[in-house]
Image (cartoon, rainbow, N blue to C red; front, top):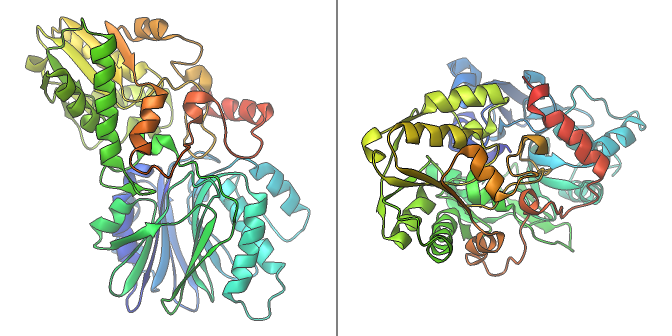
Length: 484
């Protein structure tokens, strides 16, 4: 999972605005950050490992000329964890192009092999984003243009869409054209457009638009490409006619900001509904719990936990003090780092737990080690009983569309039933949201969307051919033992 930004401004340099926008999507990637701009003559690029404020801590790093630009925060799902893999990626063959990508191509190796045979492309990394960049520029070269025009870009993208499998949202700078943005035909990864008086902005989430004073225009449609030209005019084309919309369900569970909307679905309201359904589940199927207090595991679960407490007619309390200088543990590389982070990140408020039957609410349970550690902490505070409820179903399978879920061997729910998971994390009771209720939580927000990308729960992949061999290779690359 990554965050992408693109900004056009009629009059001024955009690097500082892209910097501000990247901070608004920092939650989508903590590994690296970068900005690329275009000033009608050349591409400027600066990227480095670290958080946005660390990468651009020197004023000189934002001296990037140009009134068009793209930005990226990286959460590594393909490639290595070093600066060569940081984005945006840039090439000057056949024209200057700078690309920022969120998602994963599931057939990137096949495309890479094909491109290498052309002798047109060269690769410096293992990143599928570099594959996507080379594929686009190769298809652009094949249009045999004399003077580059929008029609050539749309033609090249038609061939890009026909070859790529997976989930992807992309924004690029293309010299002589402007900003080019597009979204995969299933709309798995989110992408939105905003506007104010003198500028346009494209972002992974609408919350970033609002924070910078942009008016939300719309989502980029699945299979659509949008061009913001150097003179500020906007053109869009539905490049792929036959689309099958499957927005990622996990965006609503965990990744996206609560003030964002994805495909007209409010993330905040979807999480409220998750809490409503989860509370009803507890009332109907676990009537004897006698919950004294409902406590969220910060931060994403707060919205759902409030509704669970409301349904149960129980007290809602904040039971943990969170160290805000530690990032999101889900997207930290390596289990050793995550374990240390949990111990330093959350401190319990003992009086909220002592002598009480406590229902902890989390957005999801991935590896189970964090849940186990938190339950242990709460019991040490003197809680009588500690129950855990998850706003999402058991996560049993790999994600192949841009979320770096651990190897299935590291997933607590893979190969275990709920009783076994409960025993492992040492909870007195464990309650999961049903998949049907989770889907309804999002679907109610936009009844036009019938399907969601839910492979982490079902093991069913909605794009292309996700082969057993591909999953085995992915499994090996994601093992924590290979990363520590």
